[in-house]
Length: 81
Image 1: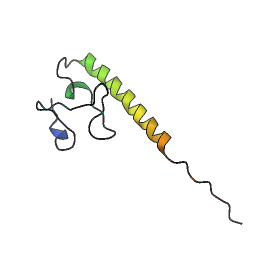
Image 2: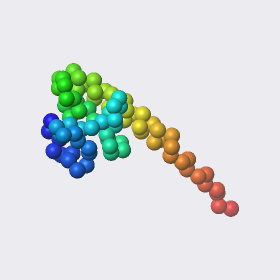
Image 3: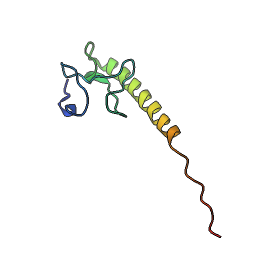
């Protein structure tokens, strides 16, 4: 796969494929998800790329929702008297 761009930033296997935390699409870098030909050793087809792309989108959506839930609420402002 064409993963030269990711070297030194994301964890790759010996063949150059992106490593993900199966069964999710999470990579070793928080907030980065892998899908398609860069993770698919076997099929490398458009339909499987679309499927893993959908999985990555769902994983990213859950990641962002968890971030939003973890953010502290803004403190209430006390009006000046």
